[in-house]
Image (cartoon, rainbow, N blue to C red; front, top):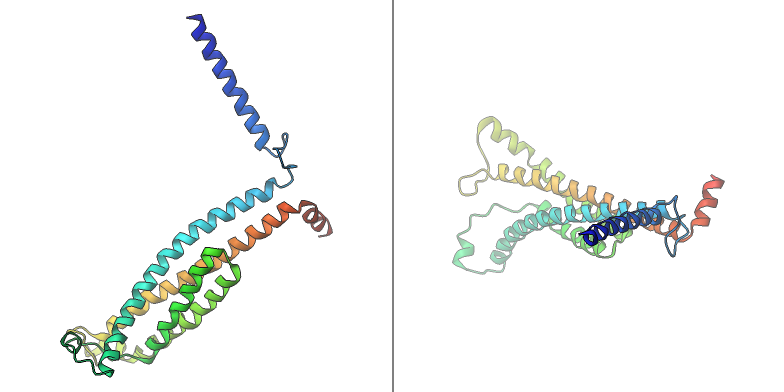
Length: 227
């Protein structure tokens, strides 16, 4: 009976002592941890925060790129049908598809796979310079052709909304409405992709600078004094 009581008291005291030592070693104001002088505490906290932001935005970017891949598949499928017809492939399945005529902005937009590929490569290496290139390529190969396509089809959309007449139909559905649905989705995909490119680039740059300051705390302190 008494043995069990002493054992319980001993275990509780050991837990309290362990918690106290753990707090003292992890606190920047207590005795420093082994291998650290305590001056890199703030930098290690910053690096941990930027790492967490990087993981979160990488997941969001992967979801965005998955939607982009789906849109690319739809446009590639449409252009492939016309490519097969151009090469005189007389397949019954291909000839029976009532596909709307392709527009030149679609040929421009399919090159938006380049920034997607560059983004995936940048996320594997946490490369801030590559993610910056992807940002501008999303603008050039993604947003620009979408904006041009929306502008070229605006008159047809106005005519359809006023008079209910469409120049092209896709299985009795107005093509101009399908195009603007595509424009709306693609616009959001590219805007979110560019936003996540910015967030990832900032997280990687800050994490790199935080790690360099943690490795050379004396230089960071001297720079702060100069400022």
